[in-house]
Length: 326
Image (cartoon, rainbow, N blue to C red; front, side):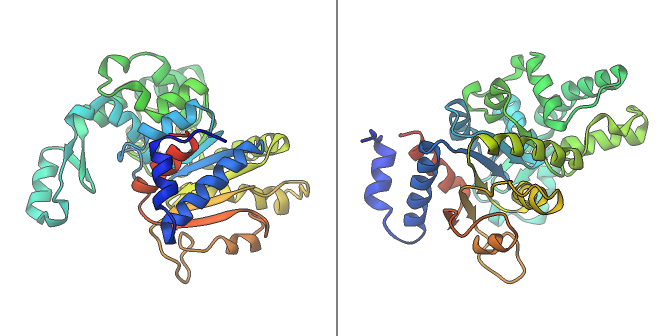
């Protein structure tokens, strides 16, 4: 029998009903999926990187409990922002009580607020911008094109950021992903701070070729090729944190392969769990129950499927702790 650490023992003893029980059921099924030879894609919506999910997510990557990540452009870049500017972040515990005048004061201090945490523009965003911009320019000069996350991998591997690290590097999920050369998929990257920086350079003429950074359609093509290869070797599960494009985009690759490309031997996702605070509602994709995905050919009636209606900043680290035996 597998040895359990104190966190896992706590979950076993206390998490018996309602969302707590679903959390433990989902964790056990995740572990069972891996034990049976499967692997897991994790999707990141919201502001998980600013919430420092990397503290637990990075170890999941290092221990190969995750085979790929789909995330928003914000989650991709904000892990690096935190890595190089953590000491300059400002936490606002009473953020719910801020007046419009106080929000304006934060703006004047170049502190961009995400719930209770303010990201410092100069130390975080501009520091990363200066390094990544070099990668964009060099690629354009060489006539190369790359995906958004590949440019960040290059920036990390260049070593230019190391002198700015302000957290333990083991707590950065993007560093762990870069070390493993983990497949990343970043739909809608344009909706991010670096995406805005890139657009501004194309508008100003600093960058002359807008296609240097490859597009979301190309990400879907990359995802399709990856899924066909990976799913031929083992069952791929789908662990979704939040809703939105980070989850909607990758889960659709299965029906696309099956229905649009008519690849009838394409297997559906072998496990599904969503952590969401979007409660079940009419017309809300993020609030759709997993059974609805059966009708779209994403899951089957036999796919283990779970919805945990709670805060991902609480739930995800607990599930990861279970998987890691902590």
